[in-house]
Amino acid sequence: MSTPFYTSDLSAQDLSNRRQIRVWLLFICFLILAMVVVGGATRLTDSGLSITEWKPIHGAIPPLNAAEWEEEFEKYKQIPQYKVLNEGMTLDEFKGIFWWEWGHRLLGRVIGLFFFIPLVWFWARGQVSSWLKPRLVIAFLLGGLQGAIGWWMVASGLVNRVDVSQYRLAVHLSVACILFAYLYYLAGVLKRRPELKRDGWDVFGDGLMGAYGLVALVLFQLFLGALVAGLNAGLTFNTWPLMDGQIIPSGLFIMSPWWTNFFENVMMVQFQHRMIAYLLVVAVFLQSFYLMRGNRDAALKQNASWLMVAIVIQVFLGVVTLLGMVPMDRALAHQAMALIVLALAVEQVCLLRREKEAALR
Image 1 (cartoon, helix red, strand yellow):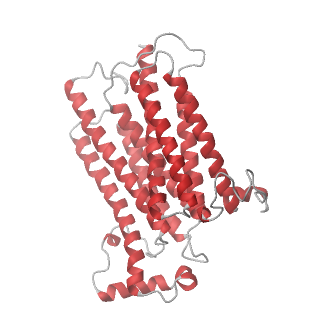
Image 2 (cartoon, one colour):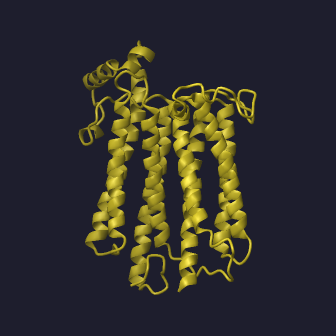
């Protein structure tokens, strides 16, 4: 039996099955990207606490008449966010934030259906390879966990807070990005690729461990970005390249115990997001230059080039978002571009694994 990455000895039917499943997984990845963007808009509009109950099934139906709208509004009036920040809000204003949160939750339900129903269809028709079955089950369970984490996050803002916990927000976004990367990786495994061979031997190895490290670094930066969003840290220190007039600002360790600064000190949270961004740029360019030199496959070199372009665009979007004090269009573009960078980093792993496998055969 062929290994997952090797496609040269597969039948026409197997290749067709792979192509169909791959298209489906890429579509789910696109929906997750949309979900992250809508979630970002929900956060920026302070809409995430407008629905105060978790109704996985019944909640798909929004209020349909005036009485139901009033009932939903009354529930919102009981939480601290309304009492502290939005007292006196009109029903029409409430509807404005309600629809963002409802749309975010509805998209989550849509993703669940678009994953589960095709999964059953492909599985029942015998189109899912044995090696892929447990991996798709893991993805389905991770998606269900993500829904529970979403409610766990919302629940943190319903009592004694006017917004959600930045810790839980970071977990919520991180799991979404991990699921995105995992599904994109599976889609990359299923892609039919030509022979990716490299001539000769390199003292620095094949670059695969570096590619895995790069994916991990992108995910870590996304986690830090969620902390920035959770603390509204992007609304402070809106200068670049200096921060508070300095390269390394004072006040990074004003909280006690010291480790809380990394998660709760607005200055430190923004500073570490900046520093990891610089590290990420250096890592991307070093790895890309390494992969582009010598006898490497053209597809690998092309992906490395696109990754360098993407990381430069992402840094630019981050800077203009900061300087503009987080306008929604720039912030959402920055968030979407982060997942594109992640996708290109995952594709690099797939290409290097395919190259390594071809070299070992």
